[in-house]
Length: 409
Image (cartoon, rainbow, N blue to C red; front, side):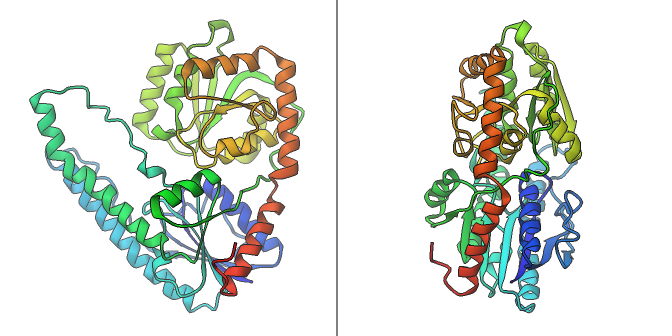
């Protein structure tokens, strides 16, 4: 089958999933060509060797205005972001023209880091399958860090800046809805996302669970060391504020250091969690992207993997930790509930700092129990979460889409 791959992804879990999907499809004899704007991170897990060619579409992102001018910065930023969004629509049309002229059987589209659902879907004549990784998380609001005052000046500033702060998110949501409604078939990574999509867009979608590369992520027999590991971007929605607050409620003697491995870091969020860690007495280290060999080593050496993102659509790193035999303690929400069997392959706790701390303490206080959770998790990944299972599901979807049976389940 000839497949056109389209994405605009940064480094991270979604890009890793695309890499393993493309690798699995190529190894089964499918021919893939990659199309992406130049904002996509093609250096993280490059697809060379698995795609026949990569077509990079020129796109210079303006993004947030870095200058600070009173009364003007938010308005200029809104205009810059709006320009980026409209330019991405033109790039989507350009990519669709190239793909439609390429005699492909199906287009396999993925997220756009700026527009969420890629604009290419709106212009394609070739049958398309869109795998949505983000789960409409942009609709989760971040608290207003400056919203502590309620005097006249504060209310006036809020009113003055309301238009630029609301306009671009509204416009992006409008574009995202238009784009996704033109997809031939929509795949999601969890039932949690599938249900959210129906509420948001009124669209049916199909769950196509991701897998994990068990040749790469596996138990190495290394000795466990006294530290906790978490993996994810240092952004508000990854929930590190909650995690650090919860760890601060552990008895000091059992409060292990926390290592966060991040693929990207927002400086403001980093400062917030580092300050919080000092206040809570948590020994925190943040490391940016490392290679897979070192990441697998950290999974194998950590005493436990802790994970507390806010309504995470799926959480591929949980499966990576489980595949390495690392005991997992995570929040009982989002797609995590579909990969971790509470009390069997890991422990889930509500988003309550005392409850999460108590659950983690239970694990840390019983080494034999922790080892049993890790062994059960690794066995479960081998049984249910490997990439061959995931590629089987993709091939079935592609076959229906390319034959014009997009609506079959």
